[in-house]
Each structure stands twice: as C-alpha cells, then as structure tokens.
Amino acid sequence: MIFMEEKISFIKDGLRLDGRRPDELRPIKIEVGVLARADGSCYVEMGKNRVIAAVYGPREVHPRHLQEVTRAIVRYRYNMASFSVEERRRPGPDRRSYELSKVGREALEPVILTSYYPRSVIDVFVEILQADAGTRTAGINAASVALADAGIPMRGLISSCAAGKVGGEIVLDPMKEEDNFGDADMPIAMTPSGEITLLQMDGGLTIDEFHEAMELAKSGCRQIYEVQRKVLIERYSQLEGERGEQAEVTACD
Amino acid sequence: MTSVISEIRKDYLYNLMLRGERGDGRSFDGYREISIQRGLIEKAEGSALVKLGKTQVLVGVKMQPGEPFADSPDRGVIITNAELVPLASPLFEPGPPNEVGIELARLVDRGVRESKSLDLKSLCIVPGEKVWIIFIDVHILDDCGNIMDASSIGAIAALLNTIVPAKKFGLGEDYPLEVKDVPIATTAMEFGGVILFDPDSDEEPIASTKMTVISTADGRICGMQKSGTGMLATDQVYRIVDIACERAREIREKFLEV
Image (cartoon, rainbow over all chains, first blue to last red; front, top):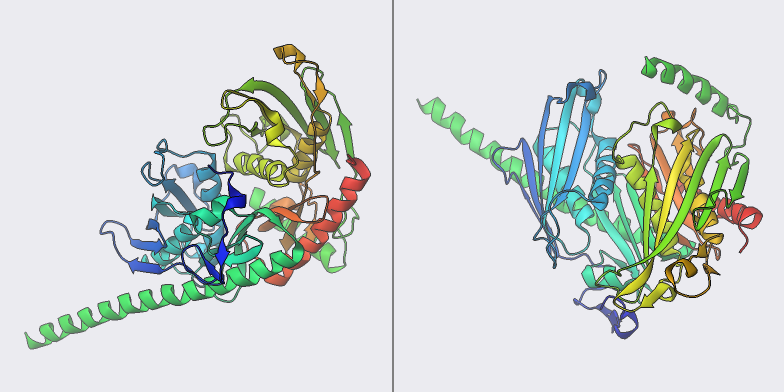
C-alpha cells in the first residue's frame, strides 16, 4: 500500500489533497496552561496532530550525578501514545523516540537561559496523543510555549515546522499522505530572529530545492510564532485582569 | 576539572582560529587523511575498516533470509546498528546504546536508505515470505573525532564489497550485492562563527553545534541533521551544505568509485 506513489497526484489545479495551497500550513490551534500539576503546559493541534507538552522545573536533579555546577540541564522526552497511530504501537521509547528526544532538546536548549539555574533540571515531557506527520515539530511548538508558561527565562520562543517535496513540488507542512509518498521531508525549528535550532532532512533534494524548502519552512515557522505569541499574551493579559479584580476586592475590604 | 581543561582548550583553539589555523594545521574545510581497508572480516558478508585521521571505525555487513515487514512484502530489510564500545573512548560506557549511538546509527541508515543505494526489491526472495535482511553493524574502535563521517564511509564501503551468501542458504550461487549509489556524510561544526569540517576530538567538545549533510553521487542531498545545543544562521547552513557536497564528491571519487 505504501508503494503506490505513481498513482496519486498530489497537486491538482494548484491545490493539495486536503485543499491547501503548497505554501499553506494546516489549521493550528494552541492552548496554554492545560495541565494543573505541571509548572507549564501547552496543547497543540496541527492538522490531525494532537500533542501535549508539560514542563517541570527548574527542580532538583535526580539522579544527582547528572547535575551541572554552572547551569541547569534540560531533559526532553518525546513519547507516542500507543493509540496515536493507525496500528497500535508498543508503549515505551523506540530508537526513533530517542532520536526525536535528542533533537527536540537541542532545538529548545539554545534559547533557554540555563545559567540562571545551576544544579537544577528543566524537564520537558511531550506526549503525542495523535500522530499525522509532523509530530516532532508540533511537539517542539508545544514545548516552547509550555516553557514560557512555566516562566523559564528564554531568549525567545522556538517555532518549528517542516517543508517537503511531493509530486515534484516543494510544499509546506506535509500531512501524512504527503509524508508517506513524498520525495523529501525537512523539519526545521528556529528562533524569532531566524536562527536554525533544528534541521533534519531525508529524501532527495537538489541544492536549489533545498534552498526553496528552507525559505518555505522558515515562513511557516514565522506564522506559527505569531500564534504562539498571541496565545501567550492572551493567557497572561487575562491573568493580569484576574489579579486586578482581586486587588480591588481587597481594597473594598 | 574537565570544564577547566575545555575552557583552556577553547581559548587556545579560538586564538588559532582567529589566525585562520587549526590545531593540526588543516584548513577549515580540510579533512584528515582517510584510508579504507575492505574485507578485513572474512566471516562477514562485507566489511570495511575506515581510518579518518586517528579515528577508526569497523563496519560489518551480515545478510540472512528472513521475513519482510508487513507493509513492504516484496522488499528486503536494512537494519543498522552502532556500538559505541568502551574500548573506543574514555567517555563511552558499557550498556545499551545511548542517544548518541542511536542518532549515529539512524543517520548511517538514512544515508543508505534515502540515497536508494540498495534496490530493496531485488532483495526479495519470495514475496510476503522471505527476503534478504541486511544488517549493517557499525563498531567504533577509536573515537578521535567525527565518528559520524567515518561510519558513513565505512557502511557504504562495506556494502560495496558485500557478497550475497546465497549458497549458504540454498538459494543458488553467491553474487556481489548491487550498490546503486554512494552516499557520503560530511560533518561540520560551528564555533565562534567559524565553520570547521571533520572536527577531531580536540575540536568536537568545544562545538555547540554540528551539522551532517549526506549527499549522493549526482550531488543531491539525501539526508541532513543538525545536532548539538547551539544554533546556525541560514547562510551558515547554506555554506555548510555547499562545502559538504563538494567534500563528499572528493571522498567518493578518491575512495569509493563503484
């Protein structure tokens, strides 16, 4: 079933299988502060991807020998729920999850001011509840907002999305079908000022196609950044209001 | 203690770099000497010992018939593994592969797979029942830096001298494994705005960012990976990719012509 690439036409009349233009993201929804126990949390939907991220810390490092004298360490755990994909997957980490945990951590750590919290750990847990191509990028987007929600000092938010090549064309944010049958997939993550903190690619691209994919993926990241920023501002201006009301009540007493 | 040493080393290497130099006198985009010894392990279907400067990596290829994956019943299977055995570095510990080893194995795998250097359909014996399983096992012997590139070169070199052991399994005469492309990984590190290729074990610890680019014989990119906790500007990425493809071409022409 996976090898029927010739039969599918990915782009018809300039639109993709799901009606998107080549340079269009899937609908994105971000919610901040969705978990009560975590210090920071965030829920993200990108198309049919549903991911949730929680941040704990800065807190004491266990086991102790992992602690660093001059900075906080960052741990990032990417985990897929067994029901998140078509065929049930065995619970627990596989090699892919280890790799995605590593690159996820390395995508976020460049902006975290770890030197503010020596001898401590910032734990980031990302759970993939439903997967539909692009879970690592959705996870990083959620984790970035969750870090901000936890009040972790950062140089900026990290935004992440992929560009791919399907049916000879470079497209933004490939969905499952495009990822499975496409010719290349290239997830990136970047800072608001455009520095690259995640870059992976598999498939086949010429150098020119690579440049095109890079610019497209960056434009996707910029769009996602605006959403992340907006939801954080909304969330915290709301909290500001709550505190204001409380203050008034106290004044009346 | 190690952090004090690395601070001193960082200063030393940084000052060298300001003068346009590296510790061992190479240019910023120069590789250490490469040598490849093929067929060292007779028990393996294919093998290669790669030396990249003092770094040594041994790659063995084993093949055996087995069951295909359910979603690709008419295709052979590639399984890539990397062992960072404690003999290779004071920093390696015994035990199951850690994330560095897993990332390494997955990148080597990505190069072989995405370059389509192996025609998986030709490795089918009985559709849905029996296909060739190719195990690519990367054994790091001496980590003096950049085990990524050494492993990638080793994997494709070992595949290039792999003989399919058909006779052993009653499947006809042995024949050489067909290899259709020669993917080469080249790795650069960034430090203080400078890009260095093929970092050695003195340079590697001071890098916060590394980037590996895997390219094919026709100059296309078939895999990329940024690793490390730093970041790269877009034009740095573009520069790395350009040089990486060029270096890969040189290595391929010199050592691995099919």
